[in-house]
Length: 63
Image (cartoon, rainbow, N blue to C red; front, side, top):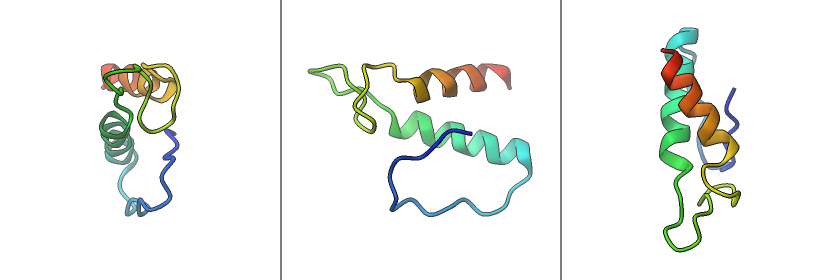
């Protein structure tokens, strides 16, 4: 599961497991983007690509 850092994000409604996983991957791809000047993740502050982005890319290739 890809953890969401922001608390204001509402929990996803109950979906079938493949659809739920795909939604979480898309959310991670949307949230974990690089800051242009520093190349750090805007969400978690890690060097980009951060661990969540790497995991999301790995999972999206598995579909």
